[in-house]
Length: 302
Image (cartoon, rainbow, N blue to C red; front, top):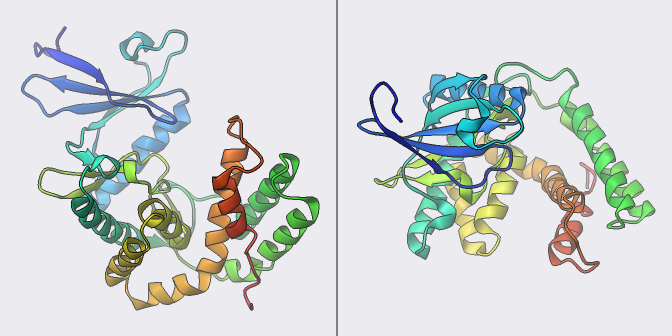
């Protein structure tokens, strides 16, 4: 096999939640990552996100090509024709795979600084880079809260009174959410597997098909969970490194809005786990811990 006379090899690049990633090593050329999406819209979102980040000069893979008619047999699919994007492969080690504590700590703080750079890019409307959402952010978010509370009640993780009370307390933030005037560029899946440490220690964000403009507070809460939940000192340093770049005004706003976005983030974690299809015991430790935070939501004036 060859590409313009060059031999190449295909290697699985690890599991993906929405994609079948394949590493392409072509003789004499930089390696590439082919992603096969089951739905065209997902491939379009990935292409749009990579183009947007390229235009902004942020460290991320670059889009090389997209071909929505590549035969399924090239990526191992047996019954459906996937939709394809090809991007530059980022050589290095994901943060989750760093074996030594000190390099992992240093890299985590660099991730915090990189997230602050992402979040410094703002615009007045929320949604995907190439557009905006029809429903206003407050309405979309609070509708989602009601839906998640009902689902968690059906699955037995919160009782009807807890669902009603939590929904009412989240709803009490509507006017505050309506006051948000700018939305930040967020990764939308800021976990330890989505940041690669390169050969020179540089940090590059990967798996970017969910990039959007949203309030940065929830992403920072989520990153603190993934990078610092087992190490309070690291969590504190992570936050300090972030606000060294983001600045005091961002710190002030985060302090005011964390009381909403932290419970929201944990409510989403509960919902995804409850509907995942996994067999969960009534004393599931993660769900119990997340439940305490999700139900801690208070009113803006509290």
